[in-house]
Length: 255
Image: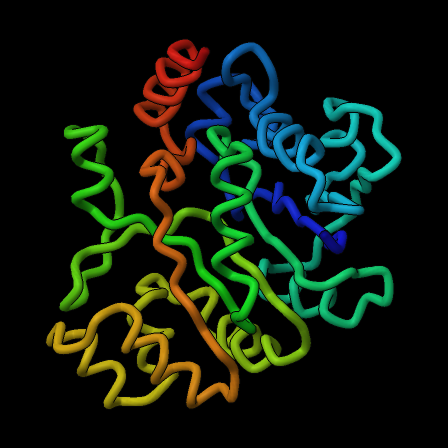
């Protein structure tokens, strides 16, 4: 198995984060979950995998984030760019990157080896892969969980905070993402950016998620795939106090 690079995005949104403030910090990635700062959970899961030669953590305040992470020669903590898209664009041209590039977030506390292996195996032929979880799958496991869903003819899906970029063919998508990153209706703004027909097809739910991404890929000149993950907990991150309570409960139930 060839070794690749994993990225953990551990930055903060502009302004005060209510979850961070509730725990007396200004950095969400440092909020304690299950007895340790949340950023340690995905970092430790990635370091435990044999897939990655390097795990790079990106944050506006790398010194503070680095202080709470384990000592490991594969781990690099560095300053992020002004936005997520700009950060990833910069990485595309970094000669130290070993492709493909797996990207996740500091609040992906429940990330585990099963999720990592399934996502990487299914994503290996894509230029851009996006981890998703289907709504019925999640509600069967967590009936009361509140997520953001995007509806397609094939069902409703929530993001799993897992992405894979396989090289420079991902650049057009990152450039478009950067152009609409400040838009509040990001999903619809992105779809509109890919063309009115794709926008209307998504709005009217006349295409499956895979058909929609096929059309988007044609516009980008890249193979774009949705990776429908079998473990519904892949869609659970820690973004608000109710998420924090739920994730602590799920961690306590782990063997």
